[in-house]
Image 1 (tube, rainbow, N blue to C red):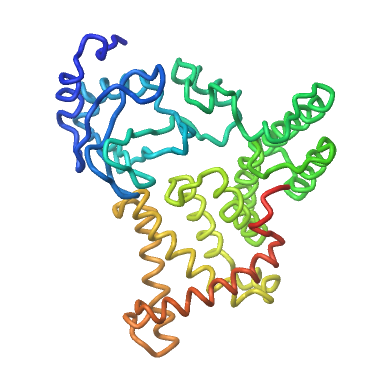
Image 2 (tube, one colour):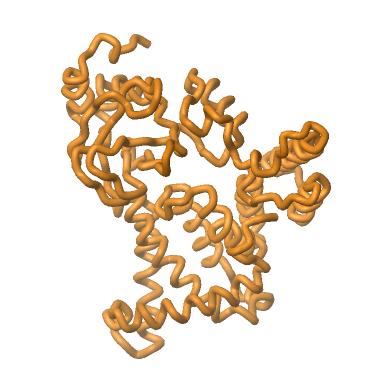
Length: 371
C-alpha cells in the first residue's frame, strides 16, 4: 500500500483525512510526541471521558479517509497504553452498526494526543509482538514494548536458575488456557490447577493476578461455565474478574473491555434461577441489591464508553427500567421516588454492605490482588 503521508504536508493531511468524517470535536494532525512515531492526532479542546471523538461512515470507509487514517495510525504506532510519565490509553475504537467510532475513555486535556491500542494489552510482551507483527506488519515501539515490559517482570528475578521454573509455569498456564479455549479441559479442576502451577514455581513470591495469561484464563473459564449453564460458579468467577482483575488490567472504568465484562456479570446474575438460589440463600438479598447496582453501573458506563445507541446500553437501560418498576410496585411508590438523591444515597450505602457479604460468599477480597 502506498504511503500517502510521505508525500503530503501536515496541512494537506488535515484537509484530506477529515473530509467526510464526523468529528464532534476539533482534531488536528501534527508530529507525534512519541519518539519515532511519525504523525499524531490531537484535540484542540478539553474533552471529557466517554465522548465520541470521531466516526467513519460506511460511505467514507471505502475512500481516502479510511486509507489515510489507517496509514497514519500504523505509521505513528498508536498502540501506546503506557506512554510516560503517567499517560494511559486515551481512546478506544468501537463499532456502531457499520461505523467505526473512536471514543475517549478518560479526560483529555487541550492539545493532548489521541492514543488507541490495536490489541488487548493484557497479553504478554511476546504475544503482543507476535500479533502486531503477523496482523499489522510492525513491531510496536511504545514505551512499554521498548522496555519489553509486562506484569511477568514482577515475578521474574533475572536469575536463570530461579526463573527457569517460573517460565515453565507460565508455559503451563498458557497450555491450560489453550485447553480451555479448545474445550478439552475439565472446568472443575481449572482453579486448583492454576494455584498448583503458580505455587510450584513461586519460590516464595506471590503472583499478581494480572500476570499474563491469568486474566484471560479467568475470563475464558467464566465464559465456559456460562456455556454449560453453571450460573453460580460463573457468577463467582465474573465477580473476581470485574472487581479484581479488570481494575488492574484496565484502569479506566469506561474501558470497553470492562464494560463487556460487567455486561457478562449482569447477564449471569439475571440467569440465576430458583434452583440456583438454594445455594445462594445466605446471600440472596445481597445478590438482589448488588445486581441492581451492577445494572445501573452498566447503563452509566456503557453510555460513556460505547454510546447510548449501543446494544449494551439499550440492554442495561431496559433492564434498569423494568427493575425500577418492580421495586416501585413492591414498595408502593412511584418510579420517580427511586431517582431521588435520598433514595440513591440509601441504596448505595446498602449496596456497599451487601457487596461485602457477596464477596465473602465468593471467597474474594478486592484488596488481595494476587493468586
